[in-house]
Every structure is written in structure tokens, then in C-alpha cells.
Image (tube, rainbow, N blue to C red):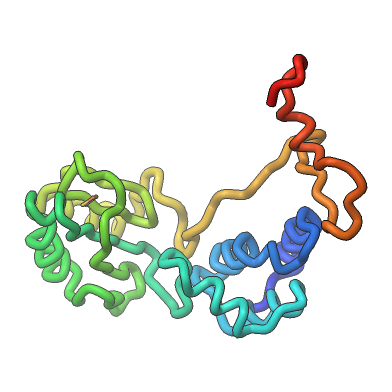
Length: 207
Ligand code: FES
């Protein structure tokens, strides 16, 4: 299945309803598509385009700006090894070499069993904890070669800990409590200041 499932279509409709312009929902819908299939399929992009009155090219043009969206199948676990400056100084490139040997694939590749995709990535904002990596965007800090091998063995044995399930790269669902919506209306229909602006005003009139 590549278009949204019935359940996800209901979620997509709810997401779209939050925006005055359907096109504004592109990013959360791309997350939803990736959550469903593990990557954003061509059919999912066509479906998103139908739902948002855009074209598949606009959907891909938006999503492809962001590294975390994948447009091809990836492994159940994305292993992103940082080789940027701090990590490089503290063994990041050696860690990547080791990861390539352990997994039997070069950076950018996916293991034959579909379990792991290895990536060489830029800074992941944990420079004080170098060398570091992420597995499905969960951090592993100051990781040694032996710890890397243990981590891979655990994942192969089904001991994933706090790492999300197979194919799920996006697990965050936006939840807006009742009464806390932004109250956005299309600009051409606006007759007064937006709700969020009034809410931000302090009682004494200062904002
Ligand atoms: S350089 Fe590796 S996390 Fe910043």
C-alpha cells in the first residue's frame, strides 16, 4: 500500500483542516507518508498532491529539501554516523569505517536483509559527545567500536530498547489541546486579529 490507508487518510484530513491553505500541510503529510511506509513513495506523493491541491513535483520539491525524508526504501534501522569536525577529531571516520566493515555495506548502502541503512552524516548537534551516531534518530553517544558491534547485535536480536519499530522514522503526532488551536483563517476572510495574538497579550496590555 502506498497511498494513505483509511486510518491515515482520516489523520491527513484532520491535519489539513488545521491550515487555512491546504498546501501548508505538506510537511506533516510527508511525515505521515513516511511513517506509513518507512519512506515516501511516488504514490504517496501523488496522494498528497491530490489532497493539497498541489502537484507531485511540488510535494517532492518541498520534501527533498529535508534530509530526514527518504524517497527510496531504507532499512529498518537508519544508522547515521557523524563525521563532522568534532566527531572527526575523536574518531568519527574510523567509526564509520568500522561500521562499514561490521555491516558489510558502504555509507549510503542497505544491508541485504533490509535491517540497516548506513549513512555518513553532517553534525547531528551532539558535538560534546563525539564520536556519536543516531539509530532511527535516537542518539548513541561516545560510542566505541565494541559498543557499536554490541548495538548491532542487540538490534539483530530484537532488543531495540527505545528505538522505534521497523520502518517508523517519524513517530511524533501533533496534538493540540482543545481551546489551544491557533484559530487561523485565510487572510482574505480575516476580520480581526488572530486568536494567538490576543492570547499573547498580557493583562496590562503589554505583549
Ligand atoms: S560534529 Fe558530530 S555531532 Fe557535531
